[in-house]
Length: 104
Image (cartoon, rainbow, N blue to C red; front, side, top):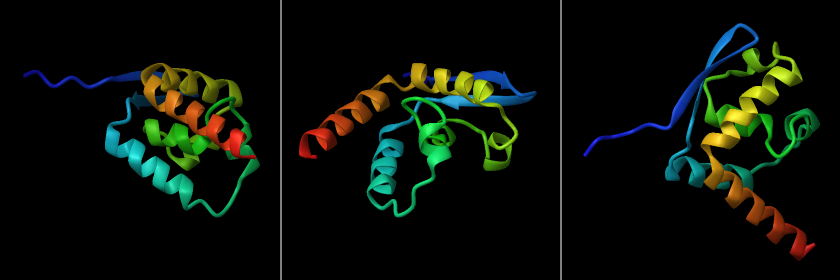
């Protein structure tokens, strides 16, 4: 059996960034972290549509100090690759949002 990884390298703001597909355990950890979240950062949550900066960091090699130096347009390019490589994650995220809205 050949093991494949679903990842892609791109350049953003002069940085080499590797974006990868989350595995099932990564998604479980993401859900657990989301449930335990106690603070809210507007830039983190709303800067890029449909994905938080924290979620972007989960899917790539960018660190906080790297992200702080990127423009929103550069970060959006990284987010686009994150979305492309993680359709199941975003499907789950959409279902969670729908569930949250139906309970509100």
